[in-house]
Amino acid sequence: MWLEVAIMASIFALGHILLGHFEAGTPKWRQVGKFFLSICLAVAISNYAGRFWFYLFLVASLIYALVIHLWWLPKHGVNGWTAEPKERYYELRGWKL
Image (cartoon, rainbow, N blue to C red; front, top):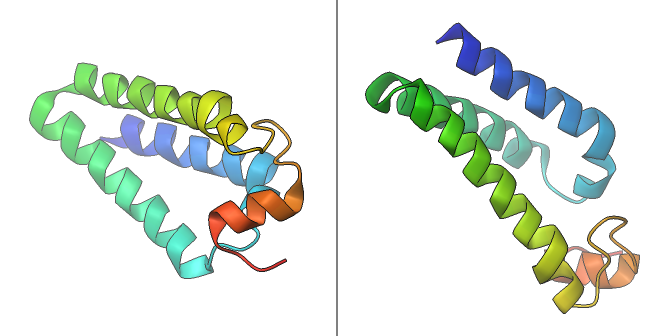
């Protein structure tokens, strides 16, 4: 299971380095919980269903993110790439500016 853990940890590390500023209002406990929950889910999928299903989980996660950024955010008046206007993005996330 080390490969699945390494892949998931790398995705999270790169995500937080490059995109962490979009999660400024998310509590740290929730970010940590998401990390461990995602790793546990990925390892469980790989262990019980096989590595193919783990990779399918990664692809499904990517498709989910694309739907959010390319359709849902623009539909609600937020640029899916830059999260602008910032006020609207924060409003959608339930954060205070």
